[in-house]
Image 1: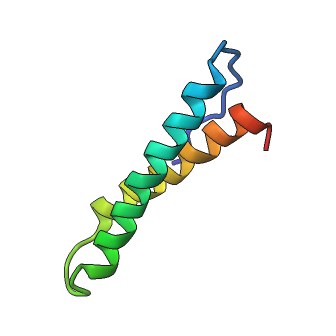
Image 2: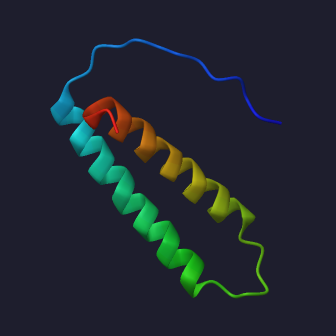
Length: 68
């Protein structure tokens, strides 16, 4: 079930967004590495869900920072 989309307006410090994006990117890299080294037989749904959530967060931050 897809959540409804919302439009919000917030004041943010661009420097903090860049730092947040970098930190989240590092976490995403760690999850990608974890998935690559995980057993193919293992249940990786939790890791995949976290990775997908981090990708979404990066997209939001990029949109806030760069309007991309």
